[in-house]
Image 1 (cartoon, one colour):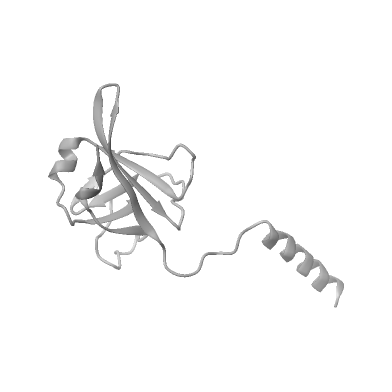
Image 2 (cartoon, rainbow, N blue to C red):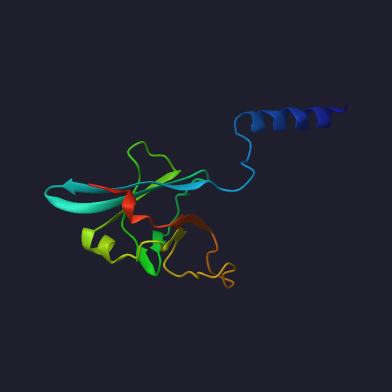
Length: 138
Protein backbone atom coordinates (compact mmCIF):
# COMPACT_ATOMS: atom_id res chain seq x y z
CA UNK A 1 0.00 0.00 0.00
CA UNK A 2 1.18 3.47 -0.77
CA UNK A 3 1.39 6.14 1.87
CA UNK A 4 -1.56 8.06 0.34
CA UNK A 5 -3.72 4.92 0.38
CA UNK A 6 -2.84 4.27 4.04
CA UNK A 7 -3.68 7.86 5.02
CA UNK A 8 -6.99 7.71 3.14
CA UNK A 9 -7.86 4.36 4.78
CA UNK A 10 -6.96 5.70 8.23
CA UNK A 11 -9.01 8.89 7.79
CA UNK A 12 -12.05 7.08 6.39
CA UNK A 13 -11.93 4.63 9.30
CA UNK A 14 -11.84 7.50 11.80
CA UNK A 15 -14.74 9.32 10.16
CA UNK A 16 -16.96 6.24 9.88
CA UNK A 17 -16.19 5.09 13.44
CA UNK A 18 -17.83 8.20 14.92
CA UNK A 19 -21.00 8.01 12.85
CA UNK A 20 -23.59 5.23 12.78
CA UNK A 21 -24.34 3.61 9.44
CA UNK A 22 -27.07 5.22 7.36
CA UNK A 23 -30.47 3.63 7.79
CA UNK A 24 -31.65 1.50 4.93
CA UNK A 25 -35.18 0.38 4.26
CA UNK A 26 -38.47 2.17 4.68
CA UNK A 27 -39.24 4.67 7.44
CA UNK A 28 -41.16 3.44 10.45
CA UNK A 29 -43.61 6.21 11.39
CA UNK A 30 -46.09 5.76 14.25
CA UNK A 31 -48.63 7.78 16.17
CA UNK A 32 -47.45 7.09 19.72
CA UNK A 33 -50.37 8.73 21.49
CA UNK A 34 -53.26 11.15 21.29
CA UNK A 35 -53.95 12.63 24.70
CA UNK A 36 -55.90 15.35 26.42
CA UNK A 37 -53.69 17.63 28.51
CA UNK A 38 -54.65 20.43 30.89
CA UNK A 39 -52.09 23.17 31.54
CA UNK A 40 -53.04 26.24 33.62
CA UNK A 41 -56.72 25.22 33.38
CA UNK A 42 -56.50 25.22 29.55
CA UNK A 43 -57.33 21.96 27.80
CA UNK A 44 -55.42 20.89 24.72
CA UNK A 45 -55.04 17.76 22.62
CA UNK A 46 -51.51 16.49 21.92
CA UNK A 47 -50.65 14.10 19.11
CA UNK A 48 -47.23 12.51 19.62
CA UNK A 49 -45.53 11.20 16.48
CA UNK A 50 -42.37 9.11 16.28
CA UNK A 51 -40.26 8.26 13.22
CA UNK A 52 -37.19 6.14 12.59
CA UNK A 53 -36.06 9.04 10.34
CA UNK A 54 -35.21 12.14 12.42
CA UNK A 55 -37.08 15.41 11.92
CA UNK A 56 -34.26 17.86 11.08
CA UNK A 57 -33.96 21.25 12.71
CA UNK A 58 -34.78 23.69 9.92
CA UNK A 59 -35.55 27.34 9.36
CA UNK A 60 -39.13 26.42 8.40
CA UNK A 61 -42.25 25.65 10.35
CA UNK A 62 -43.03 21.96 10.81
CA UNK A 63 -46.64 21.08 9.95
CA UNK A 64 -48.88 18.15 10.73
CA UNK A 65 -51.44 17.77 7.95
CA UNK A 66 -54.57 15.82 8.88
CA UNK A 67 -56.85 15.51 5.89
CA UNK A 68 -57.00 19.09 4.58
CA UNK A 69 -56.18 20.71 7.96
CA UNK A 70 -52.72 21.99 8.86
CA UNK A 71 -51.66 21.89 12.52
CA UNK A 72 -48.77 24.31 13.04
CA UNK A 73 -48.42 24.38 16.82
CA UNK A 74 -45.88 21.85 18.05
CA UNK A 75 -43.23 21.21 20.65
CA UNK A 76 -40.27 18.88 21.00
CA UNK A 77 -40.39 16.00 23.48
CA UNK A 78 -38.87 16.56 26.93
CA UNK A 79 -35.88 14.35 26.06
CA UNK A 80 -35.05 16.48 22.98
CA UNK A 81 -35.22 13.54 20.56
CA UNK A 82 -35.23 14.53 16.89
CA UNK A 83 -37.29 11.40 16.14
CA UNK A 84 -40.36 12.63 18.04
CA UNK A 85 -42.67 15.61 17.55
CA UNK A 86 -45.72 16.60 19.59
CA UNK A 87 -48.45 18.62 17.89
CA UNK A 88 -50.94 20.64 19.92
CA UNK A 89 -54.51 21.74 19.15
CA UNK A 90 -57.70 22.71 20.91
CA UNK A 91 -60.31 20.05 21.65
CA UNK A 92 -62.66 21.88 19.27
CA UNK A 93 -60.11 21.66 16.44
CA UNK A 94 -59.63 17.95 17.17
CA UNK A 95 -63.40 17.37 17.10
CA UNK A 96 -63.59 18.93 13.61
CA UNK A 97 -61.02 16.48 12.20
CA UNK A 98 -62.34 13.51 10.25
CA UNK A 99 -61.62 10.10 11.73
CA UNK A 100 -59.62 8.13 9.15
CA UNK A 101 -58.06 11.24 7.54
CA UNK A 102 -54.47 10.90 6.30
CA UNK A 103 -51.68 12.18 8.60
CA UNK A 104 -48.36 13.53 7.29
CA UNK A 105 -45.62 15.86 8.47
CA UNK A 106 -43.90 18.42 6.25
CA UNK A 107 -41.89 21.61 6.51
CA UNK A 108 -43.21 24.94 5.27
CA UNK A 109 -46.72 26.10 4.43
CA UNK A 110 -46.28 25.73 0.66
CA UNK A 111 -46.57 22.08 -0.28
CA UNK A 112 -48.37 19.66 -2.51
CA UNK A 113 -50.26 16.49 -1.58
CA UNK A 114 -49.19 14.93 -4.88
CA UNK A 115 -46.52 12.20 -4.70
CA UNK A 116 -44.16 14.25 -6.89
CA UNK A 117 -44.26 17.88 -5.80
CA UNK A 118 -43.61 20.63 -8.37
CA UNK A 119 -40.05 21.90 -8.76
CA UNK A 120 -39.11 24.38 -6.05
CA UNK A 121 -41.40 22.90 -3.42
CA UNK A 122 -40.34 20.73 -0.51
CA UNK A 123 -40.93 17.06 -1.26
CA UNK A 124 -39.74 15.80 2.14
CA UNK A 125 -42.57 14.34 4.18
CA UNK A 126 -43.33 11.67 6.72
CA UNK A 127 -46.57 9.67 6.32
CA UNK A 128 -48.27 8.37 9.49
CA UNK A 129 -51.25 6.48 8.14
CA UNK A 130 -54.69 7.69 9.19
CA UNK A 131 -56.19 9.41 12.21
CA UNK A 132 -57.69 7.04 14.75
CA UNK A 133 -59.69 9.21 17.15
CA UNK A 134 -60.31 6.25 19.45
CA UNK A 135 -56.63 6.58 20.54
CA UNK A 136 -57.55 9.74 22.49
CA UNK A 137 -56.92 9.30 26.23
CA UNK A 138 -58.43 11.80 28.64
